[in-house]
Length: 380
View (tube, rainbow, N blue to C red):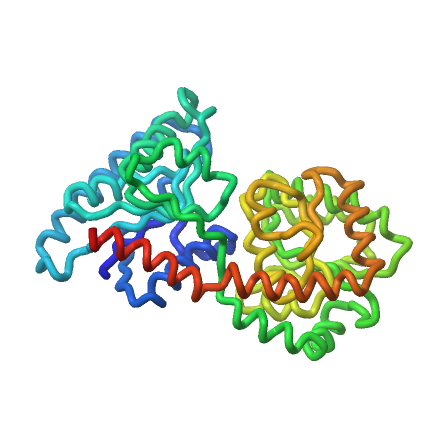
């Protein structure tokens, strides 16, 4: 099937690493694994983070012009080479799709969305234009692939009666992570000296960008929790960088001698890093679901996280890790302490994490489910 793919929030090859970028890449991989011919329709970033109505109007006009040009271009192709389906990844009020609905309607092809959310409180506010555009796009969608279960109710209310809402948990290619888990001891030995982490004590891991807002807030919760654990041996490995680096360092200053700053790491390095550690820590303030948490579990790394958004759909509390109230540093410290003190519990959580990821969050299974839903649309 020929698919026109568009990510209004951020192109999947954007140089800044993020969970959004990784999930977009996984969706592309799932489509291609199923044998679909995917082409990028546009690189227009429709995101307006400031609530600037004039900017939103300009983006709407630019999107309309791109849509008109695309329709004209597609119609010059032989019918067999035109897109059979439009696929938009990540739709919400700050990054509406000004292109896909117009193209899909003009060509008479299904309009599909993966990962959408609805924030009713944005109606009438600074992002009202994007909010209404997102609702109109959802009303046109034949299929919405719901990655975050926390968004399902809001999205379902705006779909047409015959539209499908497919629950597809976040996914990844689990094979490289499982392979890394099988080499844990060797990977740990390789990392010990560069990280300044003695192999005989627990290694705690954070993988997150350093920017103001929710990421910094999560680091600050972590910085409030860890001083209560200084009576136990551990080393914190922090993989990430960004404009808020100084503020993150300040947040973790109370345990600075125990922190190893690993800097930004490439996606290809994450599996080995996760496999070498003992616990992934992330307070997850306003986290959508947390691809880093999924990657940790895919490598058999138990997780302690805040119970935010779709995080409970990834981290099974009491099985693959522990979930605590978001922002509660004392509860976060207590959950971390419990797992630090219980080697058997960590081993059991590690085994569960590997099993659950392979069964419910692997690329191959997601590809089959998404492919079946898309082919029903085109066949109908």
